[in-house]
Image (tube, rainbow over all chains, first blue to last red; front, side, top):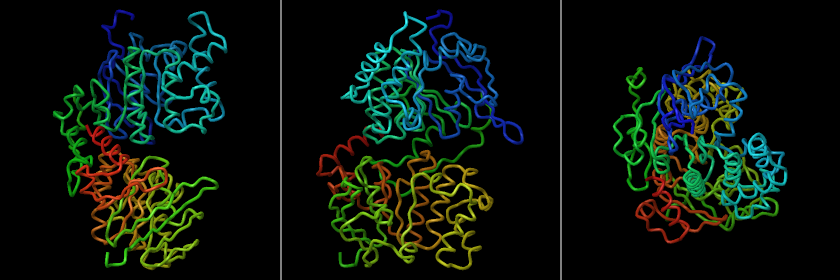
Length: 290
Length: 249
């Protein structure tokens, strides 16, 4: 890649995001730093911890009113905060793909699946390798649907989003995001709207595709054990800050009380408990730490 | 069972137009018991719950609550006895009504006096601050909204609570609080509950017995102890258990 960024696909240093409220600003992200290469990084935290906002900030997808500041916010060496709109358009949906929670809302309901994938393919192939015709785009869409393991890709190509199941919709979404051959995939709660069995299948699919294509994956989720299973590294966020960063396989050895609390409060099939321990939030977690 | 069950379902079938979504299911729930319904989306578990609550008209079979057979239409006494909590508290609370108004409605419907004190007590029971009383749903967090939905269900003193994925839209930390709240309330009020969830760990935590559904049928009914010990007979149950352990890590 561009060589001057020591192999980091994403570099975030002291990122701060504030949203205006009637009496000033709400601090959604309060000085977080981490970097990632072509690896699988999980970002975990409760709602409101700032995990999604972090992903959106990297794509510059936050509303205009949001105040975004950072010492460094770089994607493959490109300064996201200083980039032109034109440059951002090659990143968004091109070099960075975003998969959101519910395919019901992120797919266009009045456009066939095939047209949506072709559109993504055309939008990002036009500029580069000698363009591509509609026919080519359709072939690409078909290949992509095969890659996301849809059994009858020809039929699905002509279907509308409401005609496919939730799991299938998410596969379509993934196919669409893979069309421009991105370097980084940001998956924001990609399986929370799906059944447990479908959830495992979709995550396995994402994992396989990411490994096979050598992409980076940023998996944003509130489900700590799930993320640990599919990622190499986990960043734990609370109230806009990083509490802890650790290798996924060491999750059960997590040090931070917040991480431990999140793990402990889940009901479990293997151990029976009359009451679930609830999270006691320590005011010290809110204090600024470097 | 020598005692009359609180809820008895016999040979229930539900049709949506030409599709047959619940097929010949039977189970009963004793007074004070919590019974779980698990299965994947489309297995019919929520449909069973909604049919008991009177939200689906097209059913056949026999359903009885507290010994009284349910007909095609439910009377007011039924809704006083049976209440439901839905998955998404944002979708189930009126967006333009304050919490006070939301909680006052069931009292008006059932002609229950003493609204002022009851609403205050209901908020306290679900551990919501007094300040929440005059807020709108969008001003509350997801967990607080679900507490409002639970308070609304309980305010008219029902004996049966139907819970449809009550915690799956919540953070795990908030889920723990809501599950603890449900166990406390169940104990304090001697509630009979049916809990629908796709999460086996949540079902095992709250329920004494559960039914596993697939394709509109109950494939197996087992106890919590059998579930935890992995003593399931049906392959679908075994698959669900294996998956649950796998995701637990």
